Length: 67
Image 1: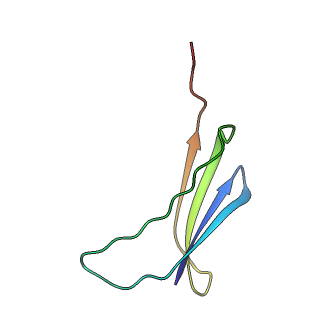
Image 2: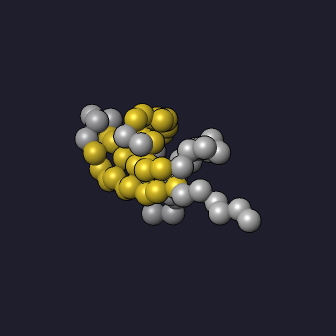
């Protein structure tokens, strides 16, 4: 089991629990749909079943410049 932990501006936003198996052919992913006003700093961490961090990534959502 793994968990994808999504954070928005340093606060918990969502957790996605997944049951995965080892495979040479299959991949897995999770996604969320942020609200329209969810611009700012985001991060996602992949945790194992003992809450060890396997991987982390940070990114920024910026507002769309409308004319």
